[in-house]
Image (spheres, chains in turn red, cyan):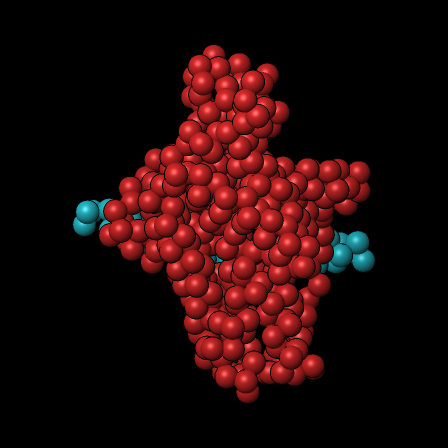
Length: 399
Length: 45
């Protein structure tokens, strides 16, 4: 037996196409980099550490399978026939998770339930029109990217799925790409999560670029007396909004149900379910989401010229949404007679709660006395709702 | 091609109507709940 036959991860490199081998090396080192950046806190560690590990493992753990086919014992995302699925679920260790939770959107819904548990809808109920206006402006990327993607030659479904990256909502991108462009589900999801981690680092520059220092420090004065939103009011809203949105857009009913049931459980104060969803479902889903995105980064799957287009379009969608949000902030600033901080606009991009935290942090760098978090969280949560609505409309129109 | 370019306008139009519909629903719901609560409090007193 040759030495190389013993070490199949290496020997497969001698029979694969040179570009695949080079790309394998690139992805192995990218995996290392993601773990490093996750550990350092530059990127979101909850996603990036498992993703980096998965990425390096899938590109190193390559071996010869039956009939000298090249494969791995981790996952095969391209299976379609039921027989193959049953067979590989007993061979690949992550195949059951992928088939039973990923490719049907369950994992996206579990994350969404967790987001529902974390969101205090009271911020939206306190200023519904302001929050919704900002969130709608922050959908600029999801709207404008679509025609650009079409002009770049993408299909209707792929163009819509990559546009949803502008909504900055990971589970929504997963759900949309599964429904609209299953053939690009893997690269679109990976591009989305890579970029979503970067919003925390990139959006402060956008704020500094478009909002002058004197406006960033504005203190918002509430002229009307504040009315405390009770848990019952939030619960009634969750029940009715869920029913209406499911009625209007049944294609996205799993997402609406997951989000609003999370809110309903939070407001009902069922502590056992809150713990189950927050500590169990959410972390289970986030861990496997990261790991799965990593192992889906197989060199031979990703070596596709469309991936480069997706990289460009994803970045464009997120940047446009950030700019749109800031424009929305300015619009409210003008409508309210300058009694509004336009930085809140960036929080309309629904990366809960990252963009709201970014907005508050940037404001406090200029003026310690300015507190905008309640407005920012309202816009942030409305961003989740508007992105779900936009996704549902795209799916309904294009599926 | 042109037909598919109308998609974003449709998405935007329907999105605006539904989103503001939700905002309006919030206002109506909160008002109704507050009126109902005040009436209940009045009856109890």
